[in-house]
Image 1 (tube, one colour):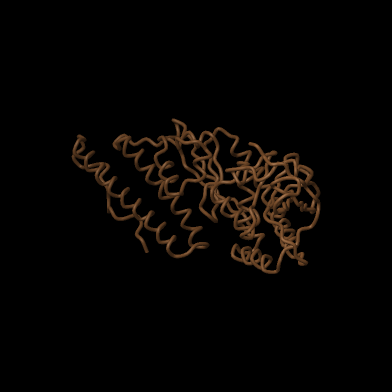
Image 2: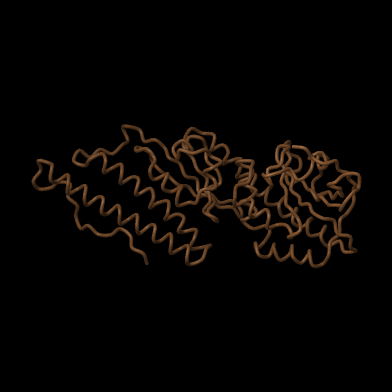
Length: 344
């Protein structure tokens, strides 16, 4: 990519009260800047090193309307992903624990045209691969330095969120390195944070594409996973972060349940339907405590629908089996069939 020649002049870039107020309003809309949203953002970046679609939306909300957010990881721009906003050499010298850097530059080169400002900070000081956050946009010449102050506060919040999520990220990275298909789900948003290669193979897509899928589609993929796999879930919470670790372990032959009078197809289909019910039920717990009524009702409908399908499936399979077996009494016939779950 060809980039224009740029002149840089170190300096502080002040802003108006109106812009400072807009930044404050955006942060208030997100809630406490040290909330689970920022911690979840930092956790996801540490697991996969690149923001997903939801991360990009959140990142863009952190800046005022006349500024563009950028994120640099492992020496390259990971946000925005469509273009490089400026040559990386202009921020390669950023370092320090709490310091942030403000530079003036001219996109047209040689101090021509309108000057712009880059503000940059390192979110993980002391680590070998710097994660740099910042924003850039037209320079405004005013006597108010509130903009720099707001940027400094935001950087402090992001650094705290990174530190808070680092310990959990190391634990989850170790889990993802195993050969057991594993998925990490953010319980606050219901979004897939990351998964390992064995899990991606089961879902039949690459990992980068899977992290942007809606949960309903991901749930269907897991429900259609190969038979003889045990789906387990474990809730892990650390500070403001709460995740669900989903594993699909292969069941040993000796541990597989045997039922001579029950068709294998029934067992397999039942396992898939039950897996869908379990996944939706776990997300329902999170939704009831965090989200509004509409999403809770939708998840309740999913659970009820899956339960009804499972109930009908078992009834049909059992009747067909009784018709073809030599057992006239119907040894495996159902007793007291009724709906497993109903929408409240």
